[in-house]
Image (tube, rainbow, N blue to C red; front, side):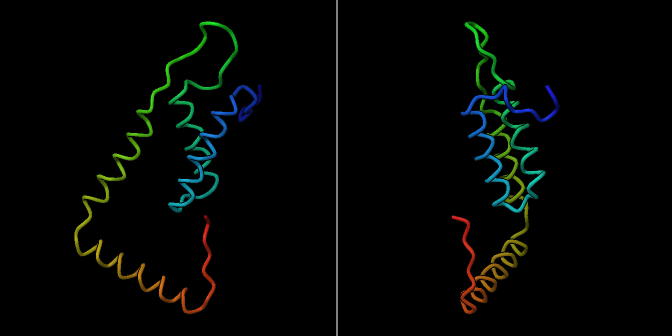
Length: 108
């Protein structure tokens, strides 16, 4: 099986990877990196591609997803108040500017 071949994965695993990838992209991660991280997470959680047969299953662990969410929360909590305020002001200005031009682009 060539590297990157996804035929051994179930449709559920493929859906999970797609969903995780979209989450990374929404947060500004480049497409290629988002895809790499998504499949790494699916592999870590489910033990890689699934093969048919009784007794060949493996428990699913959501720990990698929890770890990622926890890390993100800690990083935000460590930022100084001034940095968070500056970021919020910049975001508000961007929203205001885009609302005025009428070229709002929404992903959902």
